[in-house]
Length: 511
Ligand code: SIN
Image (tube, rainbow, N blue to C red; front, top):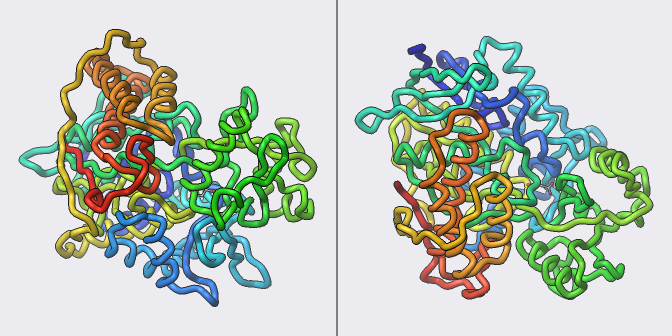
């Protein structure tokens, strides 16, 4: 078995940034199931938040983050996030990320639930792509070994300590083992659980399933964020229409052209994501339409084409000139707030196993993530992972709320079970575990998912491993959503529509 100091699974911002820092500390291997650039990072449009503006402060960023998290943020983790943000932005600039500037200074924009413009962007709305390209070029030109088309299938643990990872060579079908001192899971989220998602095809919950099977604690899985505005055009996969579009003055209109958001909340188009997503659903139901519209036609065309070149071009390629016409949108699954439970050094409950980026739950997002905090979380906490592996760490953080621990429950086999497939699973989650859920819908989904889990054959190739991982991740989302008998942040139960102080605690799921 080949031995490394660090094996990193995944090649988005968290994986690449960890690799670039870890390479000065020891040998590094990145394994990634597609090509190095297949990741969610490159789809991030809005940008990356940091309190670097003249009138901003980490304290204001802290308050906004905690307010969005709806009582479940880990306060210590949020302090770290906001305090270390400016230094990590400097690191990205030094790596060569070309953030947009205005009058010689980094340009900042506004997004929902931020009390001040603090979002850095690059190439207008191509921030994630610029970060990914910059970091992957750095990795390619360094001595870091990257194995593409290589899917991690099992974490090797001996006496509670990570020894390495098994991986499938997706081209040959052979399984190989890689030994390591530190294994960092940076596999991204699980947006592929849902029929409508802003995520790329790779977001299949791989890290969650790997870690759960190895005995890691998984937390806060019921909190899945739905972005209110993904492009809704027939035959076109949902494409993110950044919140920054509304930050720059875009407004939502219903199918009759009426500007409805002020009727729902005083913050109107810039209310937190869950409120905007729910308002859209009500408005769509009220008007009998499967979409609403973003109107930017009142903005000068050059603002649209220079600030949102990517969105402008994508829509134009699909026959829509957004400087003249309304953009049809509807909510879509976007971000998994929960994940593999880590402390503020990225450590999990298994020695030598770390998690970073969307697959991790550091506690910074609580029940609802503040826009543009995800890229930031990835770089702040991966830096700490590498620091911790070289210097040793302090005791783990205790977190803001209490915890309840559960294992996955036994479920009954329903009379009708559709055959398992990715599309059946996506439809099931969209219908039963979506933006609005309740006991009945969640129970139905939980029963079907448990039955699928038992009946799926031993996986042999990338699609079959991914389906297995989605089923396990879906079970964790669904069971946690059933357990949480309240509504909070991104989790809305129509049978428990209010939040309850007794639920100001985290749900931890273990094998
Ligand atoms: C967006 O551009 O609206 C997405 C940014 C994010 O999810 O943080």
